[in-house]
Amino acid sequence: MAQQGTEQRVDDEFIVDTEDCEERERAYRERGTARPITVVGNPVLHKECRDVTEFDDKLAALIDDMFASQKAAEGVGLAANQIGVDLKVFVYDCPDDDGVRHVGVVCNPVLDELPADRRILDDSNEGCLSVPTAYASLARPDYAVVRGQDAEGKPIAVQGTGYFARCLQHETDHLYGRLYIDRLSKRDRKDALRQMAEGTPRYETVPND
Image (tube, rainbow, N blue to C red; front, top):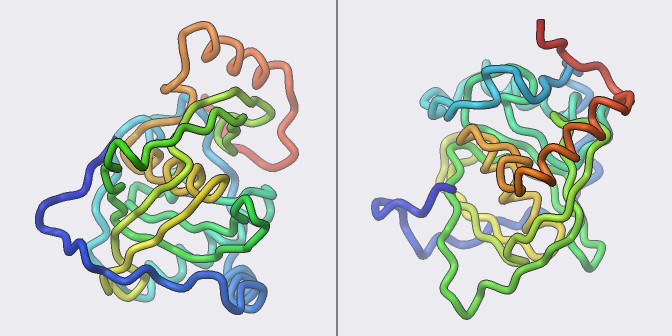
């Protein structure tokens, strides 16, 4: 998992991503077009993505499509490589454990390394749109901080607790070529892949020919 780079500021204020969620998510989604989801085995999911270097209309259009794709698949977070795009950007529309909704986008995310006294593990179930119909228990810290840039390239920091913390870690992992099943034991990974093989996705996926 990526750690915070020394060149990044540690005093970034956390963005407010809990206001006007419905309006902001709808605006993104209505401008975008839903794309099929890439699934485990697709090469784009298994390598580190390229940094976002151009914060332009093309990136804005991608973000719109990502929100539309996330909604169509009924997800709470989506990384660009999950729709086949090799760029470090993810979007989210995710509640925390208090039911507070968070909506936003992060480019070039880097997870803070938590001090030992903040590492309280939560072993809740986790799933992934790129491993459809499969779930497994996975221990992750119940607090996370991600630093990166917004869609205009401005430095941002996002913090999350509980389910939202899991989302931030999960989506950042994607952009460095790691799926949640890669963090499982061999037995649990095999079981997750079995669940996927036996299930039927409720959304369009890209076949691995």
